[in-house]
Image (cartoon, rainbow, N blue to C red; front, side, top):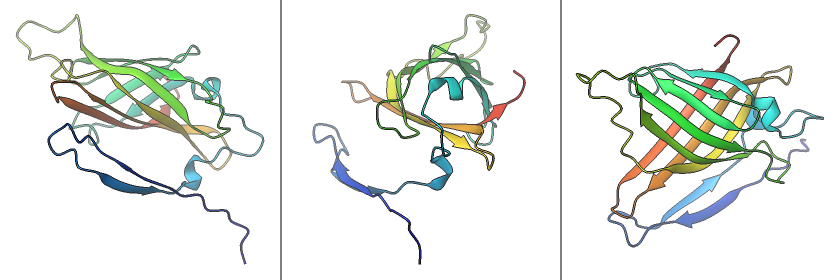
Length: 169
């Protein structure tokens, strides 16, 4: 016998004005990996730090990001893209859930003229959500970010960041 409460979120999303924007049904269920440890409150301060996603996850490019105390997201990829964004704190849900705004990629000013530069820099600004990952002692061991954006022209962009906390930048 178990005293487990299962929460499900179901729904439909679609962009009928966009090609391929047919309604899509989804069902989501919480994963215990993202549950706030007992006595912990959702807070940007708990997430402040540096995170790395290895190159085998982002089109072969390593991604490093840092979260500052004010929620600023900065970082870079190994293919010369700078990353910027904003992480907003506890949204009043009491859950390990954070809003991500103005997330995007920029060309590095250090990019040589002979380089293609950041091919992602022409994409739309993205927004989405983030969650911390906790180890068995209740410490933040990683960060997950999922964002998406759409321009009126129909250009789409999305980012999935699955990074581990770094002890040194």
